[in-house]
Image 1 (cartoon, rainbow, N blue to C red):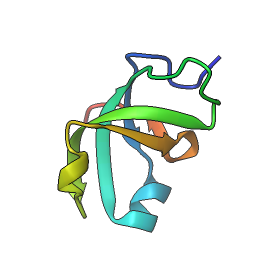
Image 2: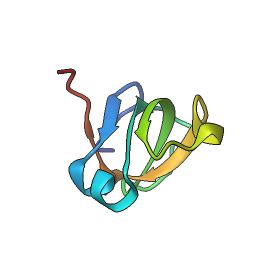
Image 3: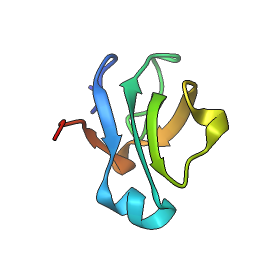
Image 4: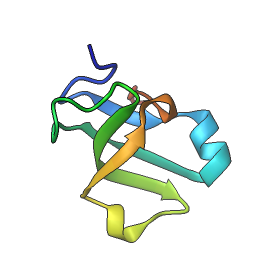
Length: 73
């Protein structure tokens, strides 16, 4: 089973922020049901820090190890 099933709200973890200076919040989406567990397709809904404007609102392949379940403050 995938660590972030379709519809799961996710955010990048502290290690990702340290490496890239960016926080991302989004939703896990399904494009290819045979994608390995190591990859999560995320629709980027929010960015903070070193943003990538072209990724906002789009589907982005991300390493599952860089994500955690989103918990609002």
